Image (cartoon, rainbow, N blue to C red; front, side, top):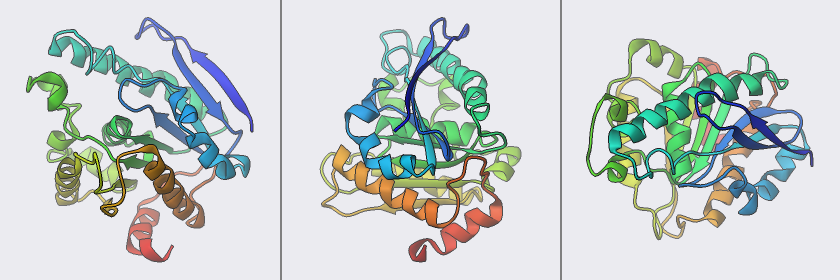
Length: 267
């Protein structure tokens, strides 16, 4: 398998953005690490081995990027400063990482964003905030209300990064873009799955706004842990593959999204 370490300089962050890239072609996938994780965690937990058939067949190219949780939501800075640093991270991903990916053989593509646990928060947050760049999301066992990291502190920056809140106030412009995209939110109901209420509320908000989203809650034997996420990601990518979405320059359309959701169980 092709595996590359890359480093993108970033004046906004004041430090490089590190990543590991797997594969040479296929649907571009950005993977966000779990809470306070690093770009190499996804591989270390066996997820790249799990996705190897998709990568080796040229169906997905995976970009595991760094998080900055330790400088943002989980830092020791005042809450307002954490939110400002989250804006820096957001800007870097949108304006530095995404162009790098599109220039890497994915011109015109929509990027699939993916993560597990707090990585699913990032995956959903970026997909909802930037529907022009991301056309699909597979968010597994995610947290969608970041109040717990800030002791209840709120300001405009915090609100703009809290999907459970802003999902009820999607702008008309974003709504039109999101209607062309495909959002999948999945979780088990077993041990340590403590955020399902947030997932349900966020998805209800999105549906009421006219944004298509699939909420898929698995059984009470499915725990908040890597073995569960390995099963989930293969399950959804298999459906994406059979639907014809896993191509280097693919961009989701509204018709494709609607058809996928309508025929989900038979795909």
